[in-house]
Amino acid sequence: MGSEQRNALMAVVLSGAILFGWQYFFAPPKPAATAPIEPTAKTQPVQSGTTATSETTTAGPIEPVADEMFSLSSNGVTVTFDNSLTVTNFENPQAAFDFNATVGKEKPMRVEFDFGNGFHPIRFAKTAEANKYFSAENDVTLVTGIDEKGRANFALTSTKPFKYRFVYDSVAKKLENGQERFFSFFTDKLNKHLPGDEDGGDRAIKWAGIDFNYHLFGTYFDKEQSLIYKNGTDNTFSMFSNKPELSLTYHMVFVKKEYNYLTDLGHQLNKSVDFGWWGIFAVWILKGLQFFHNFTPNYGICIILLTLVVRLITFPLQYKSFVSMKKLQLVQPELTKIREKFKDDPARMQKESMELFRKSGANPLGGCLPLLLQMPVFFAFYKVLYSAVELVDAPFFGWIQDLSNKDPYFVLPVLMTVAMFFQQKLTPNTIQDPVQKKIMLFMPLVFGFIMKDLPSGLSLYIFVSTVFGILQQLMVFNVKTKNTPVVV
Image (cartoon, rainbow, N blue to C red; front, side, top):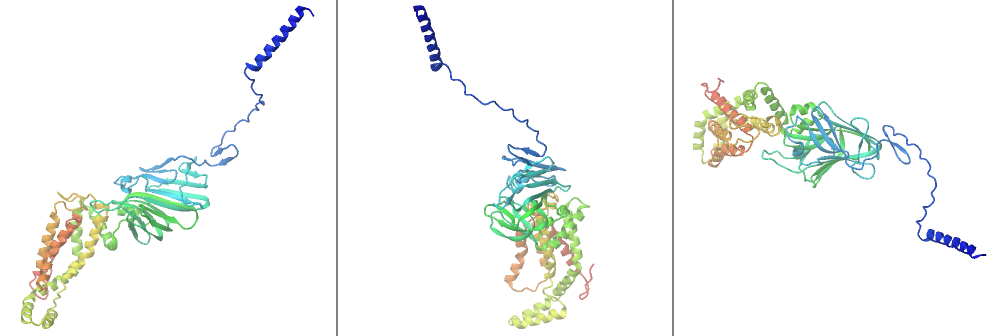
């Protein structure tokens, strides 16, 4: 082989060595071989009311993760709640005060469910239908709405049995007018519990809620439910079912407690106006005030007119009492002689005095009857003025701008006290003990002191009733015939 051939061969070998060495040490690595990508199947559009997943297609919306706020609105009434059925606001043009200020909390009520693993909230999502929601996890359908009377209605159905629990959350508060915040519920009677007071039981409950300052935020059922209730030290009131159900219907209201309005709503909601034991009298007094209010816008004048009507209705019974007191007044000289004659023989003095009363027809206890007749009306008037929102901020004249609140200058309590002193002087009595006489003398003063902080409308009623009673007594006492008094 010649030198030229050897040189050519060496050049080829060196070139190959350089080429393969560069590829091995310096050139970037080749990408790994990959299988050819198969074309994907065309995605099908999701039909309304269904949601597609990577494996299956499930009917109904998927359970949402985050909180979501819902609201219902109709005829000026708006209810706001989140997707776990926690109420946050309730606006009603019939109500006079702010919702959250009335109930005391930003989230005053929630509903929880037990599907076998304890009570806890469940989340709902909207569906294609208006006011209809669905919980996919527990297969619960919720239908809501507001009716023409401003009631928020909730109807739940499920394929799985569940128990339910309503939880109210608030805080104790008392205003200067005596209004106090309560958890209230109605069974066969009205029950009230202060937030923080521990109590519980098992009752058939018609409605329950938060009651404060003449307003009620409540939940009621179409039929009373046998529920276990608990008033906790954590300022909550809860009531829950003790047997599984497949459906639940409840209604919510936030209203100013106008008696006629509540009566129209039905379901014993008017019992939230607490008239107490004297309810039968209080309802008629309220109706009487409302009757006169149709003719005059001033509730103070309504109180005066109603007081005169009550006095006239009860006068036949009071007349007998006045006649007895007149006879007692006429026998006072003879009674004084007996006491002087037998002052050292109390037993004989008592016997002779009773004989004198029997012969004359006088009744030493006759003066108690007018007072006893007034007591039911007095307490009923007090409950109406304290409990009925109709008289809240109702002015009379001048300085009295709220008949449900006290007289700021105590004018009516003073006038009432003076009138009671005069009536006491006019009424004969048989009390001889000096200590008892002093006690009786100070009774109008004590009563006036008690009345100074009570509603001015109540002082107005007692003052007018006392003055009118004095006029009735004077008409009877001024008769000329001793044994047959005649009403002028």
